[in-house]
Length: 62
Image (tube, rainbow, N blue to C red; front, side, top):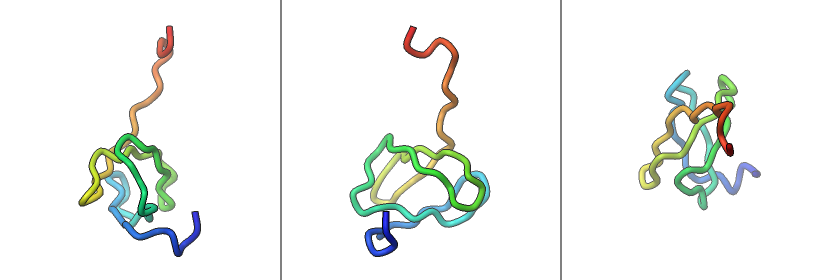
């Protein structure tokens, strides 16, 4: 993702840093905060809302 394709910014719910997002970002997409490296899930668009991504459980896919 290049800087000129980033059109949205949202605050990281963990550290408060601004996270740049592409214009075509969709709900359930996972992004990484550039401030604290935590994985975030896009839970809404227009306006973009981020939440901490769920941890992968050991029994996922079983």
